[in-house]
Amino acid sequence: MEKMNKWYKNHQKPVLISAIIVLIILVAYLAGRIYFNDKFLKGTVINDCSVETLSLDEANKKLAKQVSSKSLTLLFNDGQSEVLQSTQLGITYNENNSLQKVMDQQNKWLWFTGFFGKDKQTLTDLINVNDESLGQGIQSLQHAQADQQVDPTDAYIQYQNNQFSIVKETLGSKLNVEQLTNNIKVAISEGKNKLDLTKSKSYVLPTVYEDDQDLKNHLDAANQYCLSSIHYTTPKGTEITLDGSETMNWLTKNEDGTYTKDESTFKSKLNEFVKNLASQYNSIGATRTFTGQDGQSHTVSGGTYGFRVSQDKEVSALLTLMNENKSDENRVPEHTGQLPSEGNGGLGSSYIEVNITKQHLWFVKDGAVVLESDFVSGKESDSSRLTPSGTYYIYNKERNRVLRGTKQPNGKYEYESPVSYWMPFNKGIGFHDASWRSTFGGSIYINSGSHGCINLPTSFAGSLYSQIYVNLPVVVYR
Image 1 (cartoon, helix red, strand yellow):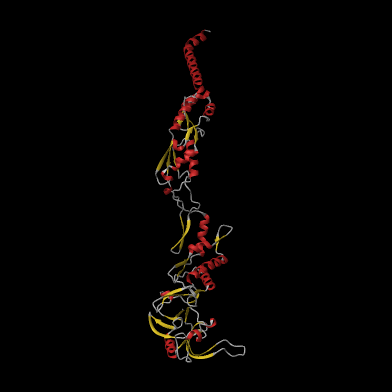
Image 2 (image 1 turned 90 degrees about the vertical axis):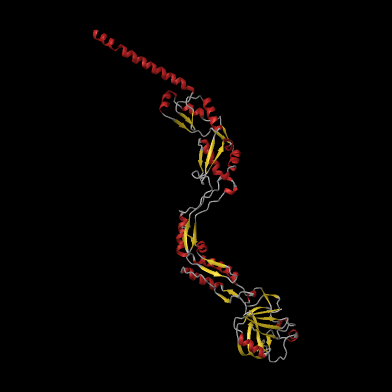
């Protein structure tokens, strides 16, 4: 007993002190519990706004004030920025929010833990956004003006210097207004004060990028099948080129995503190309305007002089070139006839001019008249014997020929006329001597004309025969 009394006396004071400390801690703990009963705990941060130790009403007021002064900085891909103020953002504070729920979820018995860390939360229902006001705010941006809207470009295959390559896509600066609007709403709801438009994909984006597998497959096939380059220069000086920039679009895509060259497809496309090419080249029967020896301008159409593309032959020739990836930088298409000369309606500087009305012709050589004569042409009063107008060319020269008319039922010809000089230019119509005539020119042709040919004095026909040549243009007009 004595020992126990002695121990108690020795420990009485420390025990009392410990009891007092425990009591103080308990009182402080209970006081804290009571204090934070209707307040947010220490360290509570809502949308980057500290509401620690605030009541629900005080927190709403502080957050509402923050919303009223809210602004959002937009960062554009040109390195510049613009700021939308709260009125431009169309935002107002939403009193009907989930702040009460946050408070209710806090364990007030653990109020002291707030002194050792932060409780950061993001509420998405603190702000109401007026879509019309926000839309007007976006439209007020300098970067949203029409002259600032540059469309993006897709990555594509480029054909240059006989080589294919992939050209990288470009972003441009055209805003995706719908996406930007949504991104602004999210940024606002999360309490952010900056929005990077590039990172948030707020621009209209390309649909094809340089690493696109389909683009790579197309490039591989183009390098295999489309290296030919065919170049034409039309008589009017128009440059026409058929190369990989066009033919790569003729490749056929397979089910596995690869591309191949389908012969039937290529031939079909070539037919279209050559048809258009022919329209640029063909000149047979074309209307021509030239200056006659009378100094007047004359227009004539029809005839056989000119150039006509042989379309089937040209398609076959092109297929051969392209199958071997060969090029031709100065190609003249497969054709019949010849290219008209430059100048004077395509007649050039050397030609025969035949004026039916005046019954006179001129042989012009290198721009100067070297021979001229009266003649007798087809019988004008008989439509079956007219000399047709048009532009033709000398397609043959022959000495001592017998010209014959239509073969009759009795086996005899309508007429047989031996001539010394025969120079045809329109099927059975041509220049020739007419020894049976003593006069030429005037109005003889109207009622006593030929069967369509140009009748000439014998001596003149001989001179003409000796100087003209095959393919020389002949223009006949009234």
